[in-house]
Image (cartoon, rainbow, N blue to C red):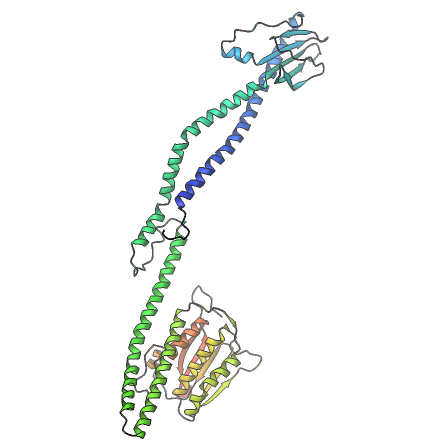
Amino acid sequence: MTGGGPRGTSLQRRLLLYLLVCAPLVWSVTLVFSAYGAREEVNELFDTEIIRLAREVQSTLAGLAPVAAGATATVPPGNGTGAAELGDLAIAAWDRQGRLMLVDREGVSLPYRRDASGFVNLPLGGEPWRAYYLQSNDGAWLVAAAQRAGERDELVWSLVLSQLLPWVAMLPVLLLVMAWAVRRALAPVRRLAGELTARSADSLQPLAAPAAPLELQPLVVAMNGLFTRIDAARQRERRFTADAAHELRTPLALLRAQWDLLRSAPDNAARADAESRLESGIARMDRLVSQMLALSRLDAAEQLPSRQPVAWAAVVEEAISDTLALAGRRRVELACDWPAPPADALPLQGDAGLLGVMLRNLLDNAVRYAPAGSTVSIAFTPDALTVANAGPPLAPEVLAQLGERFQRRAGQAESGSGLGVSIVMRIAALHGLALRHTAGPGGQGVVAHVERAAPARGAATAT
């Protein structure tokens, strides 16, 4: 990345950092719990041994004679593990009168506690010891066995260190293995990036979603959807460009010819006729360009930006007002029939402005092809609206072609480009409606039906 913007963070480096921080942290917590568990086990083990030792000593005391206080038993030389263990132990025994009957070592004097029974933590020689006092059943003997607490700590720490040292020694190997694993795990991401980098600007083929890992499949599906939308937008732009180039060629040529006639008109009558033709051509060009731009915007829209309850009375009033001038020139009357209460006129959530464009185009087409002195009528029902005129009948194949862009029936006197019906169909589709044409009563005229579209399989109808 260049420039002064924020630099991206490597996902691989971030994963390794998380593992490097979290792995020792989790291991440390585990080590603490392991040390605590080891200490509990060691305490339990040594407590059991002290109890056993005290009982064994007590069982041998019945035949002993009293000894002087401070008498000691012989301790083996301290040159082996047994001597080291004995150096951390102390044993003492007292009779009923509290006389010391047995002591196993010098320098450590276990205190006599007449009523003591069980484990007691006490200091001896400036160090903590754990002692166990055992009373005989008849009260004739009191035996105490004790162990230095440091011996237990040494054993616990030796167990912990025996686990810690291999882990510390293997930590570099573990980090290398984790780095290799992270790199292998991110290989599909690098392959996907390489595939996208190698593509040309015109390559919009979808990626193979099933071949991607589960974590990448939502991203691949989203990118494929983006490719599809981009391809559709490019197809619309190409179609619009081709259609515009095709359809504007003739009007521009006619305007040029009419301008030439206007400049070379020999008299006022010829000039007026040329001006009229030029004005008509400019109006046709203006209408064509406006329709093409409107259709391009509608094609690019995938859904309505907002939906509001439609007030059809205001929409109809505006559409009729916009069509009155054309209807007056052709001496055509406009009428509107509403459903009888309490029925509503095509309840709908949508865009009133777009629906006004739709109704205006329907009225414009109906008025243009209606005979003079006839009526163009709008009729509403709870499920549809219709716009009908009394024009000449159309063959079924001609009715089927209505809505194809830049397709007009041969021999028509009215100017047009065939885009008005396409605009109506697109606006209707955005509102969950569909447009179809049928012949009028008795086969005369054309009736445009805008009705709720049949729901697609597995999808709900938009309302």
